[in-house]
Amino acid sequence: MNKNLRTNEAQVIFGNIKLIARKAMLALNEQRLPECYRAVDGIREAIVAAKQTERALEEELHNDFYVLDRYADFLSAYADLWNNVLSQKFSSSWASLQDALDLLRLLKRFSQIDIEFFETQLIELEKIYPYNAFFSIGVTVERFDCNICGVDIDTEECPHMRGHLYGGVMAHAIAHKIVEVDHVAMVAHPEDKRCVVQYDDTGEQFKLVRYLSELIASGKLQVSDFGLLKFSKRRRPNPEYRKIGRNEACFCGSGKKFKKCCVSMEYVEGDHVDIIAQPRRIEDVIV
Image 1 (cartoon, rainbow, N blue to C red):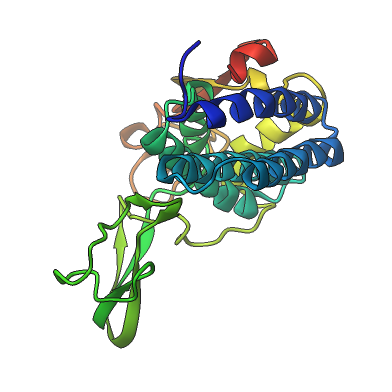
Image 2: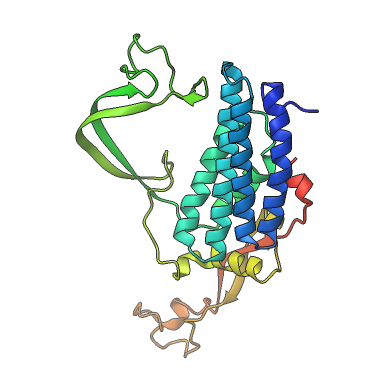
């Protein structure tokens, strides 16, 4: 048996949790969302009960419990994501997608839990959202305090390193006294992809996500079957094209003669995306 966590105790707990996680995934596939959320709550309850009975004084076990908590958080964010997609709350689904990806990165960093399916699927899902420019805000602060010991985390007095686990707590910096906002910029590769220009959920920008939502809602595609997009170029009729005399002024308003302008634009090339179903067993999703 592959050891996903550091301690044998946590490994046993995770084995039991996976059985409940598969029930949650099955309920999600069948669009029984309340049952899916109840299963995730059952996972949280199992973790809480285990914390009370295990020898939680050992640091490695504390750290494993941190991972188990994040696993439950991930399943909750994952359910939120698809719930929002099905409800056509696409802006909210983008935030849930980023929550899920952040939690996957933590699981990947601190454990050997097999998350390959989820990672591949969610990275592919990102591609059909309309966001490609993000906001980044820079601020000047007096100092950054450690959340564990309260000391300035950038000094030798603080024994903790950012992003490391200490007895089940991740060390991070807390900004102390923001002095000024330094800049607001638009970037292509932000630290936080939630900082985006908001679009209306009914807008054309969400055309592809809406199509995916309709496929799942109609039962033509299950959540666990999504995972592959095929991008291509397709020629299609130009809806603005008008066939007129070759020497007449072009319909586009350029002032040129039709034969010197849009005569060859009866068809235009556009982007096309196929959503490829990849049927899977639940046991192959949560392994």
